[in-house]
Length: 404
Image (cartoon, rainbow, N blue to C red; front, side):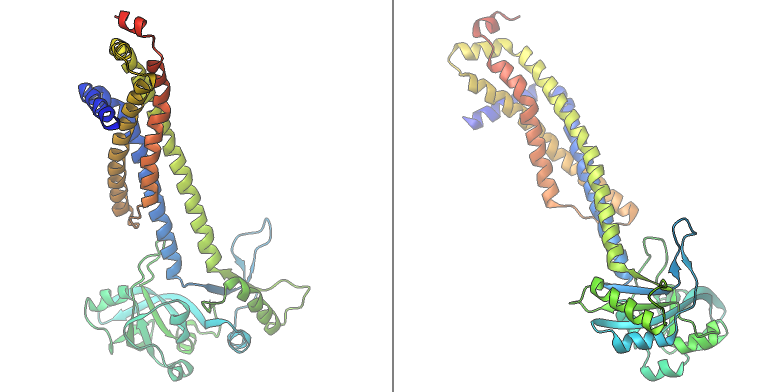
C-alpha cells in the first residue's frame, strides 16, 4: 500500500512538473544554503586549528613587558627585557616541560650571490624546533657546542630556499645574513602562511649567541617558548612559570609582573569557539529559508487539494478511508521535500567545494549535517503538508463530487 501511495505521488508530481519544481525550489535553496554555510564554517574552523598548531602545540610564550592597564594603550609596556638567566632558571626548576627555548627576531637582508631577500632572522637554540613542533626536511639542527660558541651556521625556510636555490639542495652553501656569513646546515619543513598572512617559511634560524653578537648587538631575549609535556596541560604549567620568573627577576608580591605569558592552547580554543559560533549563526540564518520553502509546499498542496477535490470525492465514495487520503497527500509533500533536500545537498556541497578552493580552506563536509539536512527536509514536508492533507481527508464525499 505504501509503495502504491508513493507511485501515485510521483505520478502527481510528474503531471505538474513546473509547479513541482517551483515548489521544491525553496527547499533546494534552503538545504543548499545550510550545507554550504556549515561546510565552509567547518573548513574555516579546521584552518584556524591548523594555523594555531603551526605555532606549536601545548605551548606557552613568555614576552617581556606587562599588559597595558584599563584605558591605556594596547600592546606591552616595555619594562626590561628577558635575559639568559630567566631561561636557565626555567630549565633548572620547571618540570613538565618538553622543551624550553629562548628566541629573538629581527627583519634583515639575506644575500646569496647577486640576489637578496628581506627575511625574518631568529636567534635561538636547538630546543626551538621541538618547542615549535618544527621538523627538518634535510640536514641537522644546531649542536650544543655550536649554540654555546655562537657558530656561523643556520637553518633556512622553504621561501628562502626557493629564492636562492630553487629546487636545489642548499646544504653546505654560504649565505650572508646582514653583514655576517653563515653556513646552511639544514632545511626547515614548510609551514605556509598563518591566518594573518605571515609567511612562516621566510625565515633563517641561527644560534642565539651568534644572533646577539652579530645581528642584534645586545643580549636581550624577545620570547621564551615553553612546550608542555603531552601529559601536562599548559594551564597547570603557567602559574609555575610565573612563580619561577617572578623569583628570578626579584619581583616583590606587591608589584605586578614585568612579563606576559600567552597560552597558545587557550588562544586556539577561543578562536575555534568563535568560528564554531559564527558557523552556527550562519547555519541558523540559512535555515530560515527552509521554513520559507515549507510554507511554499503548504501553499501548493492546498492548491492541489482544491484542484483534485472531485478525485478525492470519487475515492471516498468508492470506499477509501480518510487515512488513505491523508497518507497520499502527506507522502506527496514528503517526496517533494526529499527531492528538494537531495538536490540541495548536491548543490550545497558543490558551492562549498568551490568556496574551499577560492578561500584555500579545507573541504570538510559532515555526514551528520548531511543526514540532518535530509531528515529535516522530509520533516518540513510532513509538517507543512499535514494541514492540506487533513483538509483533503475531511472533505465530504457528496460536496466533493459536486465541486466544479
